[in-house]
Image: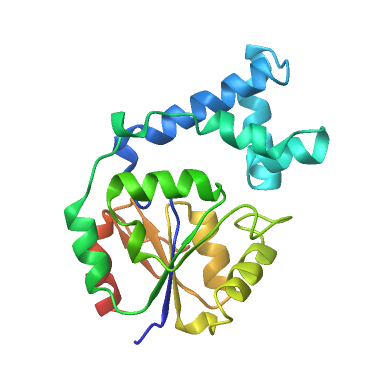
Amino acid sequence: MHFSTFFFDLDETLYPASSGLWEAIRGRINLYLRERMGFTPEEIDARRESYFRKYGTTLRGLQANYQVDMEDYLAFVHAIPLKEYIHPDPALRTMLERLPGRKFIFTNADRSHATRVMNVLGVADLFESILDVHVIAPYCKPEPGAFELALKAAGGPDPHQCVLIDDQARITRAARQLGFYAVLMGKDSVSPDADAVIASLKDLPLALEHS
């Protein structure tokens, strides 16, 4: 099957979960909830999990229930020394260079964080654009509205000619329901929530051969 457009998630998709970067970001989210929002340590995990499930991200949950400065939140939680966790990835770059079609980053994070990550990995020039939290506002993945706005920002490609690669099953499930070819990243067994499952992003070309 020929695909024209690829939408890549960022965190724990463009780089492996084993890097520890997302754990560091989660720690910063917890710190924000404690220092900026005044939640007790006992409240934080439950509050974050509740917002994640109901609203898609902690940020959207905070925005729905409190007066939160989005830019302050994003700058705070992404204030991470990236090079302590991720490094240039020549194999990733080679795979992306050989992958025919337009490529976008599609993330619930912001452009600044995405750009920093892509620059460290050495692949920033291989993506046409970053479809971030601002582009898809007021939605976030896995809401259908987020996908609709991402498709519009990408010039309106047919979802049936698009591939979505993400590490969260709820997001690949939503993409699949909208007609995308959904690839679940970081798993090693078949999932009903995706068309294909890959343990590493380097396995993507092989997964597409069997689409």
